[in-house]
Length: 436
Ligand code: SPV
Ligand code: MG
Image 1 (cartoon, helix red, strand yellow):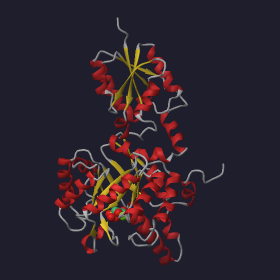
Image 2 (tube, protein in one colour):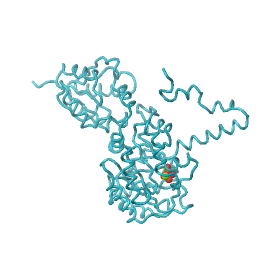
Image 3 (tube, rainbow, N blue to C red):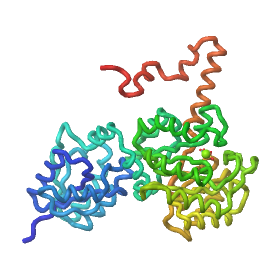
Image 4 (cartoon, helix red, strand yellow):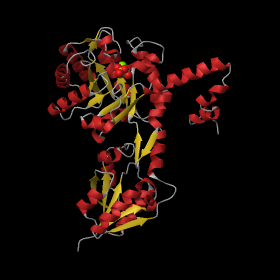
């Protein structure tokens, strides 16, 4: 008679004694089949593992007691249990509480239908994967690992959420802030290094007056305290001959992507729209820039995204589409379509028409003016990456002005107390501030 089949779901980014224990326990009941979570299954619930699926598979299939490794494409077990019909599923008993409660109930239901059994074994105290993952993160990252992460996220997630960061502190916010909504942990997936906020935070206009060296010097603060991928706002990319150096520099630093806009001449912020002179490059001219950039990069991981400014310059959706197809043909790894219209209808039409032609090239948007539209709807138009492009700076500035005004009005800072975090909080905000 064939051996019994025992199913065990695992991320297996970090192998620790708790996992080995559960494999050993499972092996007592039969052949252990590991349901190895794919990036897609993990991405909407937790941070992406450090190791890729293939790397994790190589490790897991060589562990004693493991008979087979199959992909688990969903956070829920249901689909795989129905597919593989195991006699047993084994899980640590820690899922009785917290966010995995529902997962557990669903597993019991399916296993009952299959006349199978759920084995719950006591959770190994003192060691758990999430804590270990946090410990590993605290070591930081390498440029290569960080850079690759954006492509992995785009492949794995319905939507990649990016938050503007212009300093180490805002980088930490993008890195750490998370909320729990309906059993799902939501986090930002990476940072946007914005020309607008990099310039404004220096009291300068967004006209490429803050040079690349200065911006990269400051970006280093974010790189030092974060591990998530970074998308760099490359403005127009400058002269073709200069852009090739920019690409190599960004790539070397572990930036995942540069977005360049198809404008020439003195750059003005796009949100001025037609109130400012916005001169677009010729299609040919911009394609040459993309080609030069792609030829300059060393790895296959770095991304160059072309930003189409037709709608900003008052041109038609047809013009934007013609450019999008040409830029992709020239080698762009993605396109960003921008608009300052408030209803988002132009973006929607553009994306839907683009997707009829091209199902795979990632679409990036910056919904600053049409921000009543939720991410799910943007996804339904075919969008992959959403950038919240200026919100850390725009929310901080009014708070600072209010506080400064209050001090002037009252000739003391007492009334501003409620506007400020306490001294104790700011002292403890950054880990490692106080000597133990
Ligand atoms: C930026 O953040 O600098 C951008 C986006 O380029 S926008 O300001 O909307 O043009
Ligand atoms: Mg910009």
